[in-house]
Length: 170
Image 1 (tube, rainbow, N blue to C red):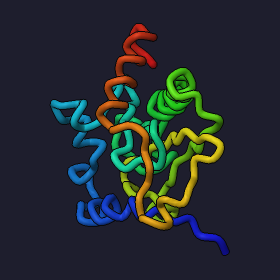
Image 2 (cartoon, helix red, strand yellow):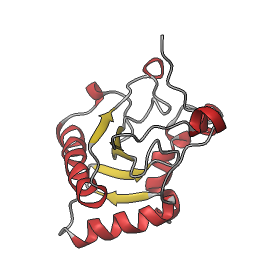
Image 3 (tube, rainbow, N blue to C red):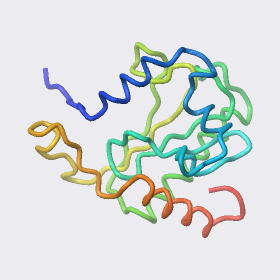
């Protein structure tokens, strides 16, 4: 059996496991209620969905799209709380296509802790841009993931791209 090693994610797992499983322990809800979107990496707010940069990205441009409401299952979402996040995922892929020109994407969600959800109480979709050859020896040999741009540098470019191409929705 092959293994996918992601040792750079260990800090996220340690941080997430120390938070209580509640609305108050939810980094998405804290970001939504916070005053500094850039510091919280909250890039876009819609009526029923939000877009965050992943603080522990697998690749440059790794985004999280979540419903505004704090729900942990697809079955708990209805109407615009279910539809708008999916539409936002589609629009974010279009924005990342323009900005980064990836050759593919990993897009998905993990529902429930057993499925790998690091934040099982607030559903969110991951959008991970991918390029041919974007894996290399660095994570295995030196436990280092190479990300080509700082989070805040990418955040600034991403928010500017969203603002420059829209009247309010991405």
